[in-house]
Image 1: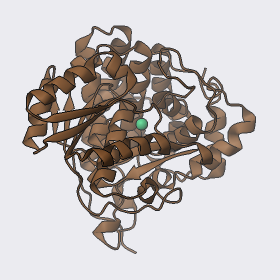
Image 2: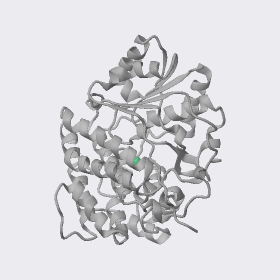
Image 3: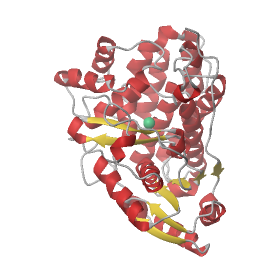
Image 4: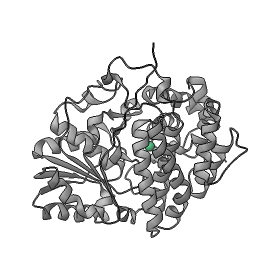
Length: 422
Ligand SMILES: [Fe+2]
């Protein structure tokens, strides 16, 4: 068996800057849309953003119908509701305005409207059928309002499957939006807790992809079609991840401390997109694999500072809590790269780095922005380790690009160490 020798980099065309969202109608017109579905959520509507975007689209002579029920933590049901709306509306374009949930819901609406089928047909196996979309989707524009998921730059839509107590998703290159519009002005209304969690997600995307198993350590695929979307670290994804790490270390504390610090919020928004391009190529692994069951297993935790009508663990909190232990575990795979990740995030040289250095830099940042101390704070105890491990093991797609093989025992160890980080 020969090893992989090829990597690919595909990126969403991005329009970035204060006021960029004013060009939303122009972009949709450029893509040929005449009648679009705008997918958004309650918070974005209450902040008046959706209404303003709606007016900008109609000003270009494009009909626009607002679907405002994207749910924080999308489920099959909430995706289906959006898909039904999309199927009934005879739309030729889609635009998501909001956090990762709205953007992911927009991806699914565009997918089902273009290639009608049951949503589960497209959901990753083993939860769904893992069918590939048969062709490109109708035009899809993504306008993020949080600096987190980087969903505008990625090929995935994540959903919660409560019956199976698991999070999974649809993942294919055709889900990548045709255009991302990233406007830092749109994050001004975000509560500090949301900025913190979203920013910690950015940091995890960057560290995980930077430290993922190199693309050429995996066997070559039999056909280009079988090359995984998450390919492992490569020279180009490293550039994006490194820059995102630098930004996260330099600006996240400021962005959380002051919502009017437009420079810091803009830098975090840029970091989200940079990290999204990096992990869209390289992938994420152990903290994200653990995060899905942490978010999906229990629904008891009510985060401060969020407006949701149900208890949930914000995605950024669910990923960051296991990151110190995860990177202590992966350290032997590439000590030098772990040191570089720590230095980028800390913004200074750390010549005597060891396995505890990157975890310590992450812990400092977590404490400074008010992250939960560990999975115990999210409602989990020793008795939950086993089901959490089981849930994490379902994320095969992610675990295969971990730099060190993480099986049941290793994952249990990481989760146990992450009960209380301080
Ligand atoms: Fe994430």
